[in-house]
Length: 244
Picture 1 (cartoon, one colour):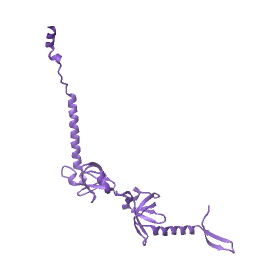
Picture 2 (picture 1 turned 120 degrees about the vertical axis):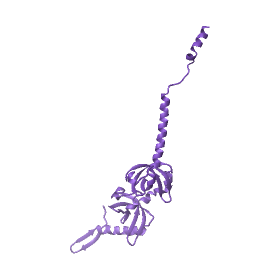
Picture 3 (picture 1 turned 90 degrees about the vertical axis):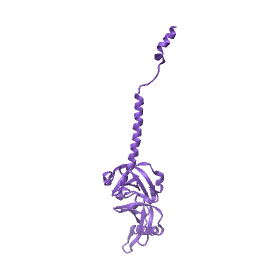
Picture 4 (picture 1 turned 30 degrees about the vertical axis):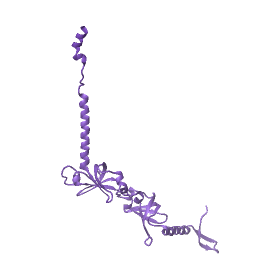
């Protein structure tokens, strides 16, 4: 194996030569860094390796220079800790949000690679549709329900039940999986109006129709068959005709 080495000490009288590979590697590293800073631009997509995780994000090695992948840029959904999305050593593709060459700072995004789920939300959901979601949090005026990572809708407190509700926690709590009916989709403002009450009412109507249908089937199945036997009705008359 051939190695590139640098002579860092030479003493002819003592026949001493000190070589170093570290100096060469350091020069190559600095050259790679300069080249990366010269070519890196916002709006690019780059491959990198997750080097270190913190509570506020992950540092990604782009090839000699680290960029920060903030926790808010890891996913369109809510992330409590970066380890929920990436691990140290993972090779990932990231979007370059900003490059500050003076302060030597690079801002990265993973979620922009995935695409905004709101862009085609109206193709995946319809007004009047009943879907299953997860309650993410409750507020004084209702509850926010996640339909998919990055897409949440609001169930207003007035749409939680067909009676007066004092506080949302009387009906739902964070983490509950519930069925809701989509009342409105505002793609531009990224808002979806949901209803627990309407979903339950629709379900009750469907259950009522099903019970009515099954009841009719049982009623028809248990009814005695009604038929006319001509032999029984006109038996005596036919017998007389045959004897004559």
